[in-house]
Image (cartoon, rainbow, N blue to C red; front, side, top):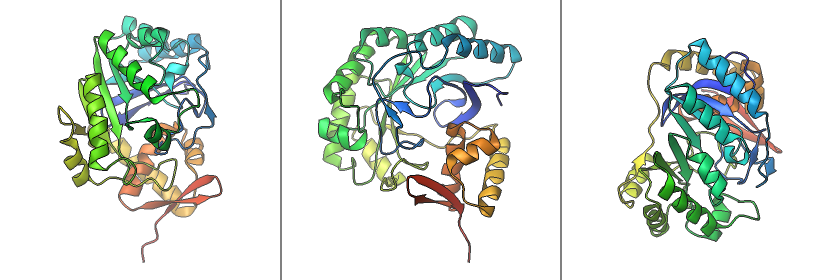
Length: 312
């Protein structure tokens, strides 16, 4: 685990990449989208302004300290509390990682800023880039992703296509599916056709396995995901739950969180403070506890509380 770092978190188990050291470049939750499925909740600051939200120099100093500590990770991932490409220095962070370690760097981006040449250039310093495409036109983009008013769906697609042409690393494209919102086969076929134009190395289907921003978001079953995966060319893969050598610690922390929720309901932010975990880490534990029917979410006003399920 990281020590008392301000911008680093983990390493945490990732369903895609193994043990991932997270690098968080933004205040919670600063993003160009307000996706209905986001595990971090609703967007507090919806923006397309690119600036140095946190000190690039301090982030790199923490990375230097972490690398010198000898802790291991499979990847170093720029993700966290919002859209990392909004940070003006994210490319400098990726360059530092490339120059100072053999650990691959991963950038998790929604792709909204890739229409800008300077963002495409900075993004190219990553070894692996994950972009998103969960809509097929402007109307569906607004339903699913609730973009900033200055963003346009075609701009998103063209930006991802332009990035693919210049990027030599591995490009993954994530399609997030929500039951009843974007799972009609005819609509998924439209997403698949756009995905084929982007030419990613891998297409990955995801669904709400962790608590989403909106309580009307319904998880797509494994069986339905399998059926829809065949509409993509090449067929999409379904992201499986990560399993590996972190399991013992994962179960220990999961038990500790459940024990607390058995005593009183808490929000994700409260759990984050009590256990000194990043919200990304907390969301993984909550997702597993909900999946195994040990806890359930309950909305009170604008807040979501998690409480243990009573077994009668």
